[in-house]
Image (cartoon, rainbow, N blue to C red; front, side, top):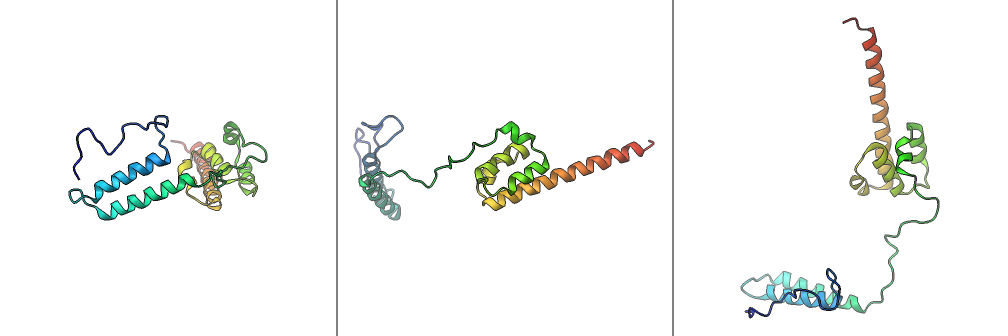
Length: 163
C-alpha cells in the first residue's frame, strides 16, 4: 500500500474535538487506517491488523451506546470527611490500632494513614486487599515498637557503661 506524500493515514489534529481529545468516530477511523497499514505485505502483521479492525468496530459501536455514569470507581461521600494528614501523623500506636480495627474505615482511609504515619508508598498499598493493608499497618506498628524497645535498651546499657 503506497501513500502519496500529501495523504497521511494519521490526521494531524482532530477537526471537531479540542486538542488532546478524539471523538469515537475519529478514533475508529484512525484504527481502521492503522489496520490497513499492518495488512500490507511490506509491514505485514495480519493478527495485529485484525485486532485493530475489531477494536475499531468496538469503538464505533461504543459511540452509539447511551452514556450512563459508571459507579465502579465512585468514592464514598457519605460519612465524615477523612482525617487531616497532620492528625494522622500525630496518632500514637494505640490510636493507630484502634483506627485500623474500625471496620467502617475504607481502604482509602487506611492507605492515607499508612502513607502519612509510616511513609509507606500508597502505590504499593493500592494493589493490596483491604485486610492486607491492615496487616501492613500492623506490621509497621510492631516494627516501630521494636525500634523503640531497642533504643530504650541501648540508652539504659549506655548509661551503665564506664568507657
